[in-house]
Image 1: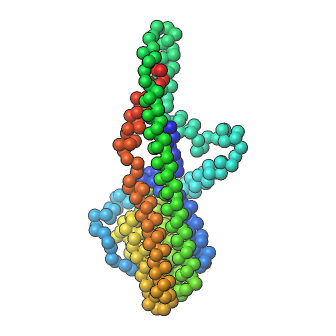
Image 2 (image 1 turned 60 degrees about the vertical axis):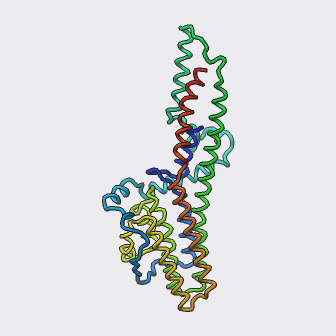
Image 3 (image 1 turned 135 degrees about the vertical axis):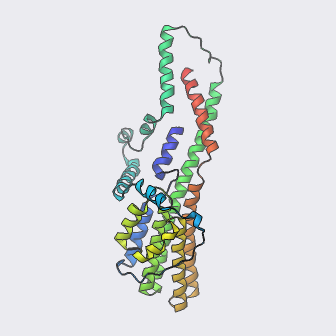
Length: 326
């Protein structure tokens, strides 16, 4: 059961380098919703440069670190294959019973076959069974309280799996909330603001959303993820990208892009395109989006406690061989 819970976290969160991220379709859906409101992403205004930063230079990646991260990241094609496979697994819940039983991808069979903690008790059991045919052995576990240890382990394993399941759905809701807020802002901006100003605001919001996932240091890299989306939708110009280089494409870059959005909202308010109420509404939606991304980063920075995982591993390693002997 512990093996399945570990595989579950890896498969659902796309874990890499010790961190995980939310689902990718939230980015794609938010881009699609925004572009359906204002179509031509090709119409790009003059870039605006912002040099202000809330962070020190200690948080900026070096060039060698960026190269290592880019080389270890999957390509856009590999991300598409992963997303297609994940969606196929999601639809398997509607299959008949016999097809569910015969499935391989996304099942416990694949996780069990690759975990040594499953094979060690099986090997111990086989060895003991062979020895009992040729050597007279005493059942030393006849009056043992091994069942108590098994019940104790099962109790903690259930709590562990439930905790990981809760973290996954919370991350999923946070990722989907970002796309929803981008759509809300795009709808309000496209009806109240000038076309050029609304277009720029939508570009910056979607760029911030994509950059936020790149900053997680997971499989979504700047080279294969952001550059592909940026080339397709023209979210940022070359000059705007250059002005973000000093932030190292981390969480700080996401915050800087949100600052650009807030600056555009304030400019629209001063020009009379929107009133104070609409400006406050747009800023509140931006803050909700920021909170959702911040929640995803919090999940990455604080996974399940190592003490808890070590405790379960230790109990499993002790109990399963004893159970095989029993």
